[in-house]
Every structure is written in structure tokens, then in C-alpha cells.
Image (cartoon, rainbow, N blue to C red; front, side, top):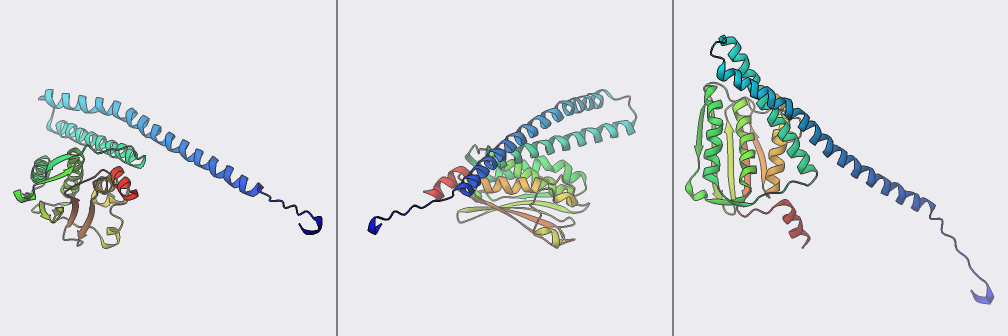
Length: 267
């Protein structure tokens, strides 16, 4: 400084360093918690699947060889097998959501014929829907053509929606699957004439563990939303309480995986 003076300054960085250390420790703790969660989900799912396989196997064996069993016992065996199947699907849903949350799920993209996708989903759901005394219809003009997507995951989405519709529809009702092409999108509608969704729940119907009033485990519709968005699409609900519900999928014809979409946005 002028006149031979010297200026000394001191900067106390203790608080900054403490904050940096705390943030680093929190990040490490979150990473460890995520790892433990994935391991927990995987281990629990494995431990559940092992006895579940035994239950299903013995139930099927008793049904196949149980000609001497009373009718009531056979009905009980059918209920056991149905409940075991529902539990197996719930385990699969939990594993899929854990994969999506951890950003570990990838799509196996290919050309998918939409009409075949709808027809196969309808056939898988037909027995359950018609078993309740309801009708099933599938409408898909050939002009809908192909889309780019993961056929197995799209089939999983439709199975969740048709299963949801089958639970909701009543005797004399109807479930319909319809597809149409508009511009660069394909619109798929799964509609039922069941009890519908109350207005106060419609905004949260795709949240996790919310869909229990329609008989589901609460993860199905959240998984539908996540898988549809991974395809670059969207899903919405139209419903009048007491007059049924329609779930509408809008899927782009040319689909990119979620990771590819992120890279494209950054570019």
C-alpha cells in the first residue's frame, strides 16, 4: 500500500469447508442407501419367489390329480393359485419400479405392429373379462401400422390396463381396446364401463399405492406411466364416476429410449 503500509486479509472458510464435507457425506449416504434398497428389494423378491413357486407348483399338481377331491376343495385350490399369481405379478411390479428408480431399466427397441399388440393383449384378458359376464372388443385398423418400441414392455402396459379394466367391469358391461393413428402419434384407448374413478382421486390415480379402490396392489398404474414415459409417450385418464373409465396412451411412432432422449436434449 502507499507509504510502505501493508494490508493483510483473512478469509474464514471453516463454514464453507464444513458445508462441503456435510454435502459430500450426505451424497455418500444417499448412494449407500440406494444400494442397500436395491439389494433389499432383490433379496426379498428372491426369498418370496422361492416359496411362491412351491405353492403354485403343488396347487397345480393337486388340481391336475385331484379328481377325487370335493368340489369345494378344488375351488379353494383355484383361489390359492390365483392369489399366488397375483403375488407373483406384484413382486414383478416392485422389481420393475426399483429398476426404473435406479435408472437401470433399458428398452429393447424394435418395430412393433400395434394391431397385433392389441389383439394379443385382448386374448390374454378375454377369459377373465368374459368370465365376469362382460364383453370384450378390439378395434384397430391396419392403417395404424408400426411403431418403434419395446414390444414386451408395451405388452406389459396393456396387460396392466386390461387387468385394471377386468377388475372394474361388471356383468353386462364391456371392455374395449382401440387404436388410431394421428400424425406422428398412435393413440391407444383401453375403456371399461365399470364404476369409474372418483373425481377427487383422478389427479393421483397414477401415483404409487393409490389404485387400491379398483382392486389393484397400487403399483400397476404407476408402472404404466413410467414405462409409457420411457417410450417418450404419455398416459391420461378420462372417467365419470359410475360410468366407466378410459385410459389413453399416446405413443410416438418413432420412439427413443429415455437415456437417448436425455442425450438429445443436452445436444
